[in-house]
Length: 251
Length: 339
Image (cartoon, rainbow over all chains, first blue to last red; front, side):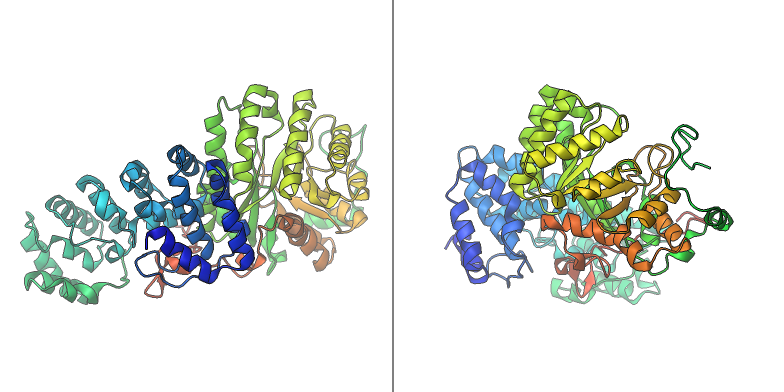
């Protein structure tokens, strides 16, 4: 079963006959009709919570959001689908942007949307950033190392939970480890801290200050920082880091 | 004494307060918040794009829970379609998000304003993209549209947008002109009726003592902009409510890049309270009527903001919010420290 069929199955189980009739009517239209249907979906389809769908990692999504993704898949297959979708990006409100970014990995030829995906990382709108950053396999699959590091760093900078990023540990790299060490030093200089789980990203890399940084963490009054130092020093497996996947006081 | 500073002698205000009331108003010091405890306000016309975060903070503190930002003229004419597109997109995007950070629900109306309707080549292009924006979530009407200089081009695009509103079942927010206001207001209403719009779907904005009676008599909503110098003062507003009651009347701030006051609604509510207008009437003109008129778009759900902004479950992680959406980032403005 392909993604569109999988989505439609969930839509069917949650939608009313009127909603299904509206969807059926819209997918018969041309690319302009599909674009408008994408825009007006929440006026026609309720925001019913849809349970998690196997093989689809948009947790807690709602019916209107799934319908939007379904419509986008249809639209992307049209001849002028790309330019229509570009216009949807250019004119999008926040919920539309979220649906667009969530849909990227399941569109045909996802790689052509890389410029949009990196734009989402620059977004100051929380939900838009989250749509590309969390539970979305797109960055892991398509981002360059530079773009990937920017994503992770921005996440840490904004005190967001990095463990929700797909591929976090697989794509850890030396350049990111160096930048993170610098970033932690800046925070320390300002009398602030970074979330303890950030240190999982340097565990496989050597940085100029690794030894003294770990010492500082080990001597910290914060038990989470002590734990982080211990996990790096003992070369603990990734699962051991789960205990630090939680919200911490950051300042 | 006339309270309209513009034309004190030749055209005195019809609704002067009594000497006693004026005395009261002069004795009350600036602390309006003491009179508005527990009140919630809905400002159906405020241009937040032109305001700072300080204003959002002040609005939230004063009890403003929801606002509508009409699309308007930015102080100078736009030269291309892309600037319109980005402006409309910012009303449904960044500005909406910025507002949510202060716990205020942000809606907007989308339209081609009267001034820029006079650039016909560009106006045609804008008309092309309007439907795309009018169908969006949280777009509660077509606005603000209407007359400025009352040119043929203004009339053409006013009519075209009334048709769009009718087709999409959206309320209309009508800007009435500063100059030749009375005639312009009558003309705006006549054209709306000619296009078959139900009066209850049309909010006639920027009313004054001269226009209000006709607007209400014909069944339209009458909005009053409390704006220093050029529009209504709030003392005059109190007299209007005394005379006409609270049915289909609403106040707004229309705060923008000019000398204006985003707290116009709470301040007017305080003055109404001081001057003996009932709480029920205050609630209608500062909250309920704005809500009822624009909720006809089907895009306003009072539950979304009446008890604070709802936090989307998808933004939560481990039971706590990632975004801390709706929580206002607070800064103690009196503190010497900036951290």
